[in-house]
Length: 451
Image (cartoon, rainbow, N blue to C red):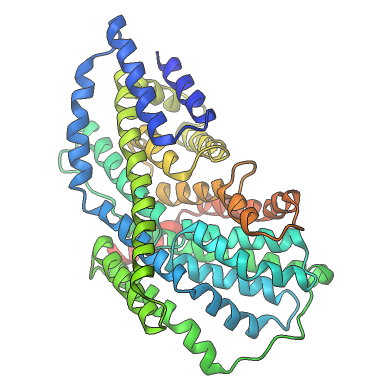
């Protein structure tokens, strides 16, 4: 029946039906078949209302719509255009300068919006035609835009870190209770924000190093621009300081312990609205547009959460958690063998699934097993976040590729987009290996801030 459950899930996903309804529908059909055959205990389904009540009373998850609102508001206020024009005027006259500008602006937008699609679309509309017109290599240009957009997955405040923090927090408490610890410690979203900061900035550094290396070794792929209008320092400051101040306010409140992620997200949402109003880009129609987009994204996230919760209950009812525990603990290499297997599974699933489905389906199943083996929850969460980041770039279904292809000029070939992201996928895997080899990259800052 477990095999039927999993095959039904993959068949439903391959059909193109919405993921949330596939998860819930396949789970209910499998449970009904098991009840008829006497193979499934219906009492497992009785826990579903309690789980939904736990979701409704979970204050951490309230940060999701608030961060989405902040990101959409900043994206609609054309912050990307102002930032890119300012930074491009600073670096564009050097070889590879436009790629450097795209990566730097992408990092700032990642920290301020946290929405991959918004960043990739904005950067694709604004910078890609200019880069291609001035002779930039299509592969380098498209790869840099897609990769810079995915930084929103790892640089806090990030929605994936909020979701991972919630799921890992539950898994960590479950693992401790199974070990007889009835006063379990917790891992918070703030812990993951602090843990992901150094790897996120390190990834930006790797992207910049690669872009500069290409400009040095193959200058014809990233020529200097001579026709950029110079900007005054005041124009640069006016474009760069407001978003950086908003990022500093939100992150500083969380990392400094002055506010919870939900409270800081509310401050960020208000700050983004004030930022849009300050530049005359806020009206009633825009506010309605932002609110509607926030509702759509939030509804998608929570619908998947409902379906995944039902799927995990049925999976557990068929003994799937014991099977996963036995499989992971029986692998050669002990704890490291289990970690490598989970990371490979998440990487492969990233080819066909969105990060939200992976977080809600895979983490509740494998998280308690890995954490019971003594794995540090913050380190594991950062590793998973970097791994999930690659799901936006891996062909054939990487969402960042689709976002860019939808707004790219007709002359840009799909093969150029696919080939362009390959070096950046390699850099992401390199950072994943670095965090695996040197765990302090993810744990040093949380230890320093929170002991």
